[in-house]
Length: 113
Length: 111
Image 1 (cartoon, rainbow over the protein chains, first blue to last red):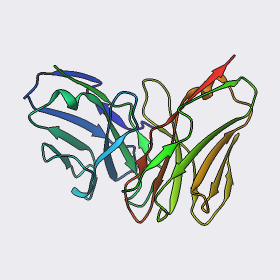
Image 2: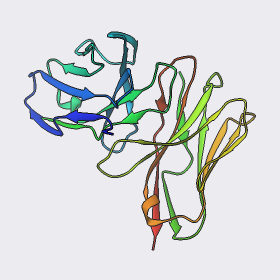
Image 3: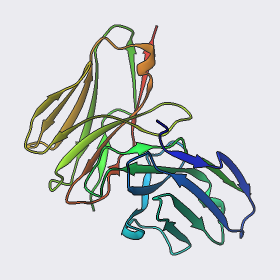
């Protein structure tokens, strides 16, 4: 049984560009959460999707947006990239909004130059 | 705002010894406290959780203790193995809210 799959694994973008990261949740999971993890720091919550709607949002600017598809997969979009957006972006899936036993993917390493 | 922090950023333990990772939290309203383990190059992995109405819960080689009086959480790992080397995060959640991560503690197992 595949766990959470994220693509791509690594990405290099130029400041000002836009990026889309993708996530396929674990089979049977319908809730997807996105986190940003800077080097040496703990993951910071970006937002959570359930039933194709954003249910919760962390303290991130509107440049960060997302989407969830009917098959529960999700995308994270970041516009107008800044150098400070360089980080590991983690996707986590869970059985429901109230399920806290998240299954994480291995992340997408984004480098903004 | 809520925060989750750790007392020790790095913990070195001899293989076979027991490990204790401590954590302080500030949000008393959380219903759940969850420990995650993150190995190098991987995403966090769920280890064990405990509800706020419990003070102890045991898993395989791991025990989590919760002291709500002093807002303290600990993870005990018995007979620490090299595969236990990782960064450990104590997190909290509740009321359908997000899982909030702290800084993390790096556990180094000395062979």
